Image (tube, rainbow, N blue to C red; front, side, top):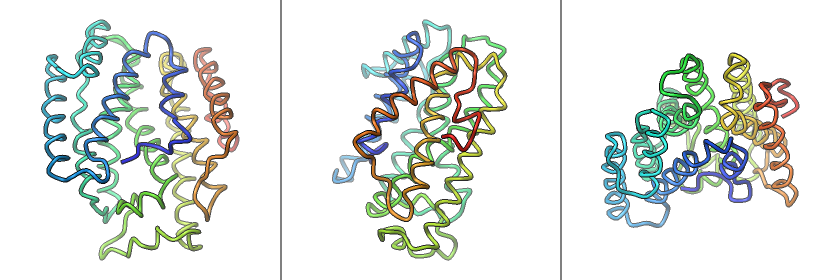
Length: 285
């Protein structure tokens, strides 16, 4: 499963503009996410995919116990030990990948929310906590932010390519019970009802991210620069998705440069103790 549109590598920007001391951990986290997702990639024989996911399930359990084998998990463990933290528990990434592999239909909002929470707990949370020490008064606020913003960030990524995912048999919009036909998300351009439903959801997710970030205490903004850059870029993706509807989001040739500038501006703001402008003023994303 593709993690994000190839022409808009958000994780690359997050890594590039993260504080220098956090990059080793983030690089390891993103590599682990890519490797686990690759184990459930389209076209891979299911028996092979399940074997690969089984290995990663065991490897991420070893990581949580501080005894990993893979180069990326070893880097993640080493970075955690250096900061005085326990290694991150990323095992929910395997559950996410298994659901992707099975092309499970989400019938109601609670099922989809659990899927998004698994991803956020396994990736966005450790990315945010990576900036803090083992004992830090800012941990509680960071946990709350990650728990709310993380799922919204990931949902925006998925909805920005909803048609492509639907064609692969994955629909990240609840189908209802009894389920409505998922084929309505395959047509391009989308019908007016689907376009309106998608626009409303993306708009709501932008507000969720902004509210979560605006509730962060001032003292958390600098250490959470990487997470705030990611949140800002998610807001940009959301706005572009809204503008593109009823057609799919197509990234033009200038977008990588625009995202580079947006990521740099967000990082500068956060490192100065300010919220990035797209988060402060929702409509400027």
